[in-house]
Amino acid sequence: MPVIEYTHRINQLKKEKNAVILAHNYMTPQIFHGIADITGDSLGLAREAVNTEADIIIVCGVHFMAETAKLLNPDKTVIIPDPAAGCSLAESITPEDVRALRVKYPGVPVVTYVNTSAGVKAECDICCTSGNALKIVESLESDRVIFLPDRYLASYVASRTEKEIITWPGSCEVHEKFTPGEIGRFRDAVPGLTVIAHPECPPDVLDASDYTGSTAQMIDFIGNADLHSLQKPESILLATECSMSDNLSSIFPDVNFIRPCNICPHMKLITLQKVLKSLEDLTPVVEIPNDVAGRARSAVEQMLSVKGSNHEIY
Ligand code: 13P
Ligand code: SF4
Image 1 (spheres, helix red, strand yellow):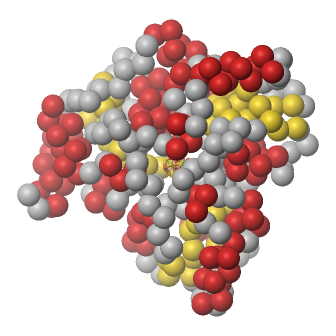
Image 2 (cartoon, rainbow, N blue to C red):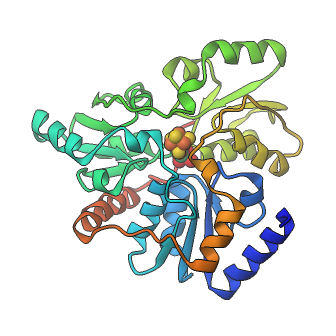
């Protein structure tokens, strides 16, 4: 079936079944521009999941994102078109690991990146996303904080706070591939290039970049460059997942996006075909055991309640 027919059929079924499609910024343009009702970063999707009136939430993203939507909407049907869509960060740590850290560092609060399983969230005090990590860490009274599981996001936060940050050796298989040498080569080839990096990149890549932010903060930054007293960048390299530039090139047609292409194989498991099938069958649904869900939900709600946690630094 041609793409246009999938798109049409999905958009039709969505209305008939009162479903909403939340799509992460890393979805392909077919999903991001063709069928999504709401697009955003992990934080934006979590916030929108709270507000939706729909009966059914289809999450076009990875499994932890669908779990977050379910935690915030326990009475709704939450569907992920491919439950195998995981994340190298979420795979890097288990609930037992968090419990062992609590024994090793008694009394030290645990901040868990939203890129984790509900079981890991249930063991922590508060969640954060790449868009609010520093705000969340700063909101805690303790001068020592355990920050899990992304070592690079942790070191980014550590470089901006007085608090001592205890880290975990997790990393994103997509962002850890960027290198300062690669960025330097692009800068040599493209005069005036602006580089915006995701904080999951290694520290030497962030040092070689002009700005750092979550995927939504990247969009805000480009859209509001004039508010930051900058000239609108003509050429931009986004040190993040490949589809991000594809999606933004039609939102910012005047910007020349330079595209080193690091693909997230987990995000790319979500396809139009699978979305259509999941809307037709209303499966696979996301379920979280009650004993885990209550504690994991309170860690996510704790994050959403932190004042100003919506926006952070560039
Ligand atoms: P954002 O919250 O910045 O969109 O990041 C999610 C993610 O998976 C990054 O790799
Ligand atoms: Fe996980 Fe990295 Fe893929 Fe994001 S890009 S879902 S952090 S593996």
